[in-house]
Image (tube, rainbow, N blue to C red; front, top):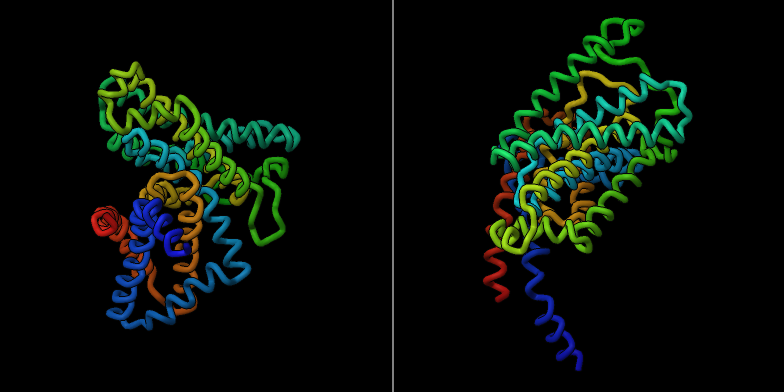
Length: 354
């Protein structure tokens, strides 16, 4: 009886194993390649990896910092993932996040007298609007003129960076704070509540809620179905009566809004003022995460946590083991290469499991 039960389970779920195992194998391959890089550059790979993982996942402060870092990364990854469901490549989550930073900052600076229960929702709405309108530009160009969203979203990142620089060096610069290019500090009503664990704040609940909402929309709503059909076959979608151009536009609009909320969360939860160092690469890391998680909104949660921890641990080993920053970036690059190989792994595993 137990043998028959195990055999039944195997037959039922073996087709899902390649889907689950390929990301894990990709991460293992990245660790192996990274170990070779460390060994070739004269570092004890085991010691460096032990320090990296312990400082990010098994140290109280490091774990809180990992969760802090994972919060905006999770939102940006969702912005990339929902576009992938419609076969769109949103390379502009970084710029959309920056627009969310700008618009939520405008609310905080323009209405300093608002109470927190009005201030924070208004900042989040402004962040969503800023990111969504920024992405909607690419959505309009794609749906109306068939301009590649890869190019438009990528190039608009650089415009967003210069917009931030304009405001922090120009009209929003805090002249009372010296020559540093940043705005004045937000009023406390514009701060997300702390969870009394390092710098962790309530923005993490916003990110988790967003992942659940995106999952429900994709799985159970007519629009989520339209997104998947457009992503699978545009001609079939049109034949079924789905407005493919409208779906593309709304998808990018919503994706930008999610990245814009990431900007709000970062401003209200951590920074509390806008400055010239806001571009942090979260939007580019989101591409790797969405791909590793196979664009599944719920799988994005642990993958975001893992890669945020690797980033935090990478910063710590720069201090504890004097590993150069360039080497840390090289280690992160091996993850990207492994992600690219994960699809090949999935195909091979699918053939092996039959």
